[in-house]
Length: 274
Image 1 (cartoon, helix red, strand yellow):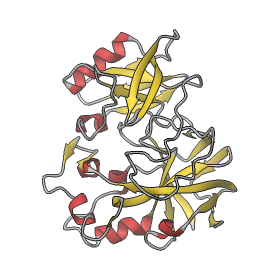
Image 2 (image 1 turned 90 degrees about the vertical axis):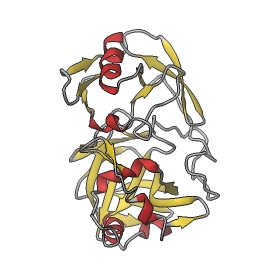
Image 3 (image 1 turned 90 degrees about the horizontal axis):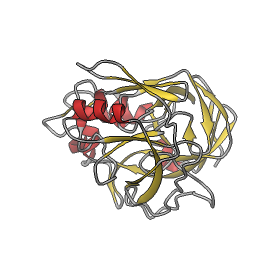
Protein backbone atom coordinates (compact mmCIF):
# COMPACT_ATOMS: atom_id res chain seq x y z
CA UNK A 1 0.00 0.00 0.00
CA UNK A 2 1.18 3.53 -0.61
CA UNK A 3 0.10 7.14 -0.20
CA UNK A 4 -1.22 8.28 -3.57
CA UNK A 5 -2.83 11.59 -2.64
CA UNK A 6 -2.09 14.34 -0.13
CA UNK A 7 -4.43 17.33 0.30
CA UNK A 8 -4.68 20.49 2.36
CA UNK A 9 -7.67 22.74 2.96
CA UNK A 10 -5.99 25.87 4.36
CA UNK A 11 -9.33 27.55 5.01
CA UNK A 12 -12.11 25.30 6.27
CA UNK A 13 -14.40 24.28 3.36
CA UNK A 14 -12.21 25.95 0.72
CA UNK A 15 -11.05 24.33 -2.53
CA UNK A 16 -8.71 21.34 -2.05
CA UNK A 17 -4.99 22.07 -2.40
CA UNK A 18 -3.03 19.01 -3.66
CA UNK A 19 0.57 18.85 -2.48
CA UNK A 20 3.47 16.44 -2.96
CA UNK A 21 4.62 16.66 0.66
CA UNK A 22 3.35 18.05 3.94
CA UNK A 23 4.68 18.46 7.46
CA UNK A 24 2.87 16.50 10.17
CA UNK A 25 2.01 18.52 13.27
CA UNK A 26 0.15 17.32 16.40
CA UNK A 27 -3.09 19.01 15.25
CA UNK A 28 -2.84 17.77 11.65
CA UNK A 29 -0.93 18.66 8.50
CA UNK A 30 0.82 22.02 8.55
CA UNK A 31 -1.44 24.75 7.10
CA UNK A 32 -4.50 22.48 7.07
CA UNK A 33 -7.71 24.20 8.24
CA UNK A 34 -5.93 26.91 10.22
CA UNK A 35 -8.34 29.57 8.86
CA UNK A 36 -12.13 29.52 9.08
CA UNK A 37 -15.17 31.57 8.07
CA UNK A 38 -17.60 32.39 10.88
CA UNK A 39 -21.00 34.04 10.97
CA UNK A 40 -22.04 37.02 13.06
CA UNK A 41 -22.89 34.64 15.91
CA UNK A 42 -19.37 33.18 15.87
CA UNK A 43 -20.43 29.76 14.60
CA UNK A 44 -18.39 28.14 11.87
CA UNK A 45 -19.76 28.33 8.34
CA UNK A 46 -18.98 25.50 5.95
CA UNK A 47 -19.81 24.21 2.50
CA UNK A 48 -22.89 22.58 3.98
CA UNK A 49 -24.60 25.97 4.27
CA UNK A 50 -22.48 27.88 1.76
CA UNK A 51 -21.47 25.65 -1.17
CA UNK A 52 -19.71 28.62 -2.82
CA UNK A 53 -17.01 28.36 -0.15
CA UNK A 54 -15.61 25.42 -2.12
CA UNK A 55 -14.79 27.80 -4.99
CA UNK A 56 -12.41 29.85 -2.84
CA UNK A 57 -8.78 28.92 -3.47
CA UNK A 58 -6.79 29.52 -0.31
CA UNK A 59 -3.01 29.11 -0.48
CA UNK A 60 -0.57 29.63 2.42
CA UNK A 61 1.68 32.60 1.74
CA UNK A 62 4.29 33.15 4.44
CA UNK A 63 2.37 33.46 7.70
CA UNK A 64 -0.68 34.66 5.80
CA UNK A 65 -3.06 33.44 3.15
CA UNK A 66 -3.68 34.15 -0.53
CA UNK A 67 -7.35 34.09 -1.56
CA UNK A 68 -8.81 33.81 -5.06
CA UNK A 69 -12.37 33.21 -6.22
CA UNK A 70 -14.33 33.57 -9.48
CA UNK A 71 -15.09 37.20 -10.27
CA UNK A 72 -13.04 38.51 -7.35
CA UNK A 73 -9.66 40.27 -7.25
CA UNK A 74 -6.94 38.27 -5.54
CA UNK A 75 -6.56 39.13 -1.87
CA UNK A 76 -3.56 38.61 0.43
CA UNK A 77 -4.57 38.12 4.05
CA UNK A 78 -1.75 38.81 6.51
CA UNK A 79 -1.48 36.86 9.73
CA UNK A 80 -3.31 38.76 12.49
CA UNK A 81 -1.01 41.48 13.81
CA UNK A 82 -2.72 41.79 17.19
CA UNK A 83 -3.81 39.41 19.92
CA UNK A 84 -7.47 40.34 19.47
CA UNK A 85 -9.54 37.28 20.29
CA UNK A 86 -12.75 36.21 18.56
CA UNK A 87 -14.88 33.60 20.36
CA UNK A 88 -16.02 31.07 17.75
CA UNK A 89 -17.81 27.73 17.88
CA UNK A 90 -16.78 24.71 15.82
CA UNK A 91 -19.61 22.24 16.42
CA UNK A 92 -19.28 21.55 20.18
CA UNK A 93 -15.92 23.29 20.59
CA UNK A 94 -15.57 26.82 21.90
CA UNK A 95 -12.39 28.33 20.44
CA UNK A 96 -10.73 31.68 21.09
CA UNK A 97 -9.42 32.40 17.59
CA UNK A 98 -7.50 35.37 16.18
CA UNK A 99 -9.33 38.12 14.31
CA UNK A 100 -8.23 38.84 10.73
CA UNK A 101 -8.27 42.25 9.08
CA UNK A 102 -11.53 43.86 8.00
CA UNK A 103 -10.53 43.77 4.31
CA UNK A 104 -10.53 39.96 4.37
CA UNK A 105 -13.96 39.96 6.02
CA UNK A 106 -15.30 42.32 3.35
CA UNK A 107 -13.81 40.24 0.50
CA UNK A 108 -15.39 37.01 1.75
CA UNK A 109 -18.69 38.71 2.56
CA UNK A 110 -18.92 40.10 -0.97
CA UNK A 111 -18.23 36.71 -2.55
CA UNK A 112 -20.53 34.72 -0.26
CA UNK A 113 -23.36 37.26 -0.28
CA UNK A 114 -23.71 37.57 3.49
CA UNK A 115 -21.75 39.15 6.37
CA UNK A 116 -18.98 36.84 7.56
CA UNK A 117 -15.60 37.14 9.18
CA UNK A 118 -12.34 35.25 8.79
CA UNK A 119 -10.53 33.90 11.84
CA UNK A 120 -7.13 32.28 12.27
CA UNK A 121 -5.66 29.55 14.46
CA UNK A 122 -2.02 30.27 15.30
CA UNK A 123 0.21 28.41 17.74
CA UNK A 124 -1.43 30.21 20.66
CA UNK A 125 -4.95 29.04 19.78
CA UNK A 126 -5.89 25.65 21.21
CA UNK A 127 -8.77 23.27 20.54
CA UNK A 128 -8.81 19.87 22.30
CA UNK A 129 -10.25 16.85 20.51
CA UNK A 130 -13.77 16.14 21.77
CA UNK A 131 -14.01 12.44 22.70
CA UNK A 132 -17.68 12.00 21.90
CA UNK A 133 -18.20 14.61 19.22
CA UNK A 134 -21.58 15.38 17.71
CA UNK A 135 -19.77 15.20 14.38
CA UNK A 136 -18.72 11.54 14.41
CA UNK A 137 -21.58 10.26 16.62
CA UNK A 138 -19.78 6.97 17.08
CA UNK A 139 -19.63 4.70 20.10
CA UNK A 140 -16.09 3.70 19.14
CA UNK A 141 -13.14 5.10 21.15
CA UNK A 142 -11.86 8.32 19.66
CA UNK A 143 -8.20 7.28 20.26
CA UNK A 144 -7.66 10.80 21.63
CA UNK A 145 -5.27 11.17 24.54
CA UNK A 146 -4.87 13.93 27.09
CA UNK A 147 -3.43 16.97 25.37
CA UNK A 148 -4.45 15.97 21.84
CA UNK A 149 -5.58 18.92 19.73
CA UNK A 150 -7.25 19.52 16.40
CA UNK A 151 -7.38 22.42 13.95
CA UNK A 152 -10.65 23.89 12.63
CA UNK A 153 -11.35 20.47 11.06
CA UNK A 154 -14.71 18.98 12.02
CA UNK A 155 -13.46 16.66 14.74
CA UNK A 156 -10.04 15.05 14.13
CA UNK A 157 -6.64 16.09 12.75
CA UNK A 158 -6.67 13.95 9.58
CA UNK A 159 -8.97 11.98 7.29
CA UNK A 160 -7.92 8.92 5.27
CA UNK A 161 -9.77 7.10 2.46
CA UNK A 162 -8.70 4.12 0.37
CA UNK A 163 -8.90 4.52 -3.40
CA UNK A 164 -10.76 1.22 -3.71
CA UNK A 165 -13.55 2.56 -1.48
CA UNK A 166 -14.21 5.29 -4.02
CA UNK A 167 -13.99 2.80 -6.89
CA UNK A 168 -16.64 0.67 -5.19
CA UNK A 169 -18.92 3.66 -4.76
CA UNK A 170 -18.47 4.84 -8.34
CA UNK A 171 -19.38 1.37 -9.60
CA UNK A 172 -22.80 1.93 -7.99
CA UNK A 173 -23.36 5.52 -9.16
CA UNK A 174 -25.00 6.64 -12.42
CA UNK A 175 -22.20 9.24 -12.72
CA UNK A 176 -18.84 8.79 -10.98
CA UNK A 177 -17.62 11.38 -8.49
CA UNK A 178 -14.03 12.38 -7.72
CA UNK A 179 -12.30 11.60 -4.44
CA UNK A 180 -12.32 15.28 -3.52
CA UNK A 181 -16.08 15.17 -2.88
CA UNK A 182 -15.01 13.56 0.41
CA UNK A 183 -12.24 16.03 1.30
CA UNK A 184 -9.59 13.56 2.51
CA UNK A 185 -6.11 14.55 3.61
CA UNK A 186 -4.67 11.14 2.76
CA UNK A 187 -5.57 8.74 -0.06
CA UNK A 188 -4.18 5.19 0.03
CA UNK A 189 -3.84 2.96 -3.03
CA UNK A 190 -3.41 -0.83 -3.28
CA UNK A 191 -5.64 -1.56 -0.28
CA UNK A 192 -9.02 -3.37 -0.35
CA UNK A 193 -12.11 -1.17 -0.30
CA UNK A 194 -12.81 0.13 3.21
CA UNK A 195 -9.82 -1.75 4.62
CA UNK A 196 -9.35 1.25 6.91
CA UNK A 197 -12.44 0.16 8.84
CA UNK A 198 -10.40 -2.69 10.29
CA UNK A 199 -7.24 -0.78 11.16
CA UNK A 200 -6.42 0.64 14.58
CA UNK A 201 -2.87 1.92 13.99
CA UNK A 202 -0.91 2.56 10.79
CA UNK A 203 2.52 3.80 9.75
CA UNK A 204 3.02 6.03 6.71
CA UNK A 205 6.55 6.81 5.61
CA UNK A 206 7.75 5.74 9.05
CA UNK A 207 5.27 7.97 10.92
CA UNK A 208 2.61 6.50 13.22
CA UNK A 209 -1.09 7.36 13.33
CA UNK A 210 -3.91 6.09 15.53
CA UNK A 211 -7.12 5.29 13.67
CA UNK A 212 -10.09 7.11 15.18
CA UNK A 213 -13.81 6.68 14.52
CA UNK A 214 -15.29 6.48 11.02
CA UNK A 215 -16.15 9.74 9.30
CA UNK A 216 -19.92 10.24 9.33
CA UNK A 217 -21.08 11.79 6.06
CA UNK A 218 -23.55 14.58 5.44
CA UNK A 219 -24.94 16.79 2.68
CA UNK A 220 -21.46 18.28 2.09
CA UNK A 221 -20.63 15.21 -0.03
CA UNK A 222 -23.27 16.36 -2.53
CA UNK A 223 -21.45 19.66 -3.20
CA UNK A 224 -19.48 19.71 -6.45
CA UNK A 225 -16.34 21.76 -5.61
CA UNK A 226 -15.80 22.64 -9.27
CA UNK A 227 -19.20 24.39 -9.48
CA UNK A 228 -19.89 25.32 -5.86
CA UNK A 229 -23.34 23.75 -6.15
CA UNK A 230 -25.16 20.73 -4.73
CA UNK A 231 -25.97 17.70 -6.85
CA UNK A 232 -29.72 17.90 -7.60
CA UNK A 233 -30.02 14.11 -7.19
CA UNK A 234 -28.40 14.11 -3.75
CA UNK A 235 -25.52 11.96 -4.91
CA UNK A 236 -23.30 10.35 -3.78
CA UNK A 237 -24.97 10.49 -0.34
CA UNK A 238 -28.16 8.88 -1.65
CA UNK A 239 -26.25 5.81 -2.88
CA UNK A 240 -23.99 5.63 0.18
CA UNK A 241 -27.06 5.23 2.40
CA UNK A 242 -27.87 1.96 0.62
CA UNK A 243 -24.72 0.17 1.78
CA UNK A 244 -22.70 2.30 4.23
CA UNK A 245 -25.33 3.15 6.86
CA UNK A 246 -24.52 1.95 10.37
CA UNK A 247 -25.20 2.84 13.99
CA UNK A 248 -23.24 6.09 13.71
CA UNK A 249 -24.79 7.08 10.37
CA UNK A 250 -23.48 6.91 6.81
CA UNK A 251 -19.70 6.50 7.01
CA UNK A 252 -16.94 6.78 4.43
CA UNK A 253 -13.26 7.07 5.39
CA UNK A 254 -11.54 7.12 8.74
CA UNK A 255 -10.30 9.82 11.10
CA UNK A 256 -6.66 9.78 12.21
CA UNK A 257 -4.64 11.17 15.11
CA UNK A 258 -0.89 11.63 14.44
CA UNK A 259 1.53 10.10 16.93
CA UNK A 260 4.75 11.49 15.47
CA UNK A 261 5.94 14.53 13.56
CA UNK A 262 7.88 14.67 10.32
CA UNK A 263 7.12 14.92 6.62
CA UNK A 264 4.70 12.86 4.54
CA UNK A 265 5.28 12.46 0.81
CA UNK A 266 3.16 11.10 -1.99
CA UNK A 267 4.47 7.60 -2.67
CA UNK A 268 5.25 6.82 0.98
CA UNK A 269 4.65 3.21 2.03
CA UNK A 270 1.62 2.53 4.22
CA UNK A 271 1.84 -0.27 6.79
CA UNK A 272 -0.82 -1.62 9.15
CA UNK A 273 0.65 -1.80 12.66
CA UNK A 274 -2.46 -3.02 14.46
